[in-house]
Length: 249
Image (cartoon, rainbow, N blue to C red; front, side, top):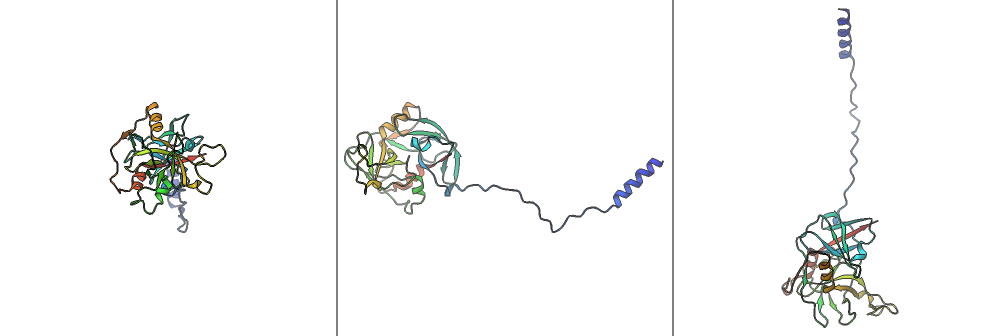
């Protein structure tokens, strides 16, 4: 009985003891939330082109070489990417990611003929910031005879244009931008004066591009059918095909 009385006494004492009151002025500690980057504002290093419905992206080899981390950006989406194949002869590479395209490139089955031809080429960042993207048609010309192994284009190139598609008048891909023309002694790309050099761009022509893809088992579409009606905007088609490439250290 004495044990029972002792237990009852302890229980009553605990019930009657004052409880700790929460300080009404105390504020809860907020959880630390790391802000996510807005993909629409990221500055990309280069451009790529969706070439099949598996999401394979064709770009310039130098744009993805030596990257500690690699990302593909499309509108508000960002995905980690990996290099699938690279060309030892040409400045070309294919990367893969989880992003899937709304539209894939249609490569020209027949290479473009001789003579200057109207083309459109612009990098992913330039297209995002282009005020007349819904109406812009061609923005450059091919330069005949400048180089036997490459397309030389007369157009303005901005940073990040490497890997951009070169579209012919019918909207087919006839090349991939890889470089600006250099002017130096003995340089075969010396196709302009120093004052004009910013207007000249080097691209890998469509035949070597298709040969590289075929040799590595990468699917692609080719056609001679027009992909755009006359006066349909090339910029809008390019913007749908292209992605941004972000190379991290």
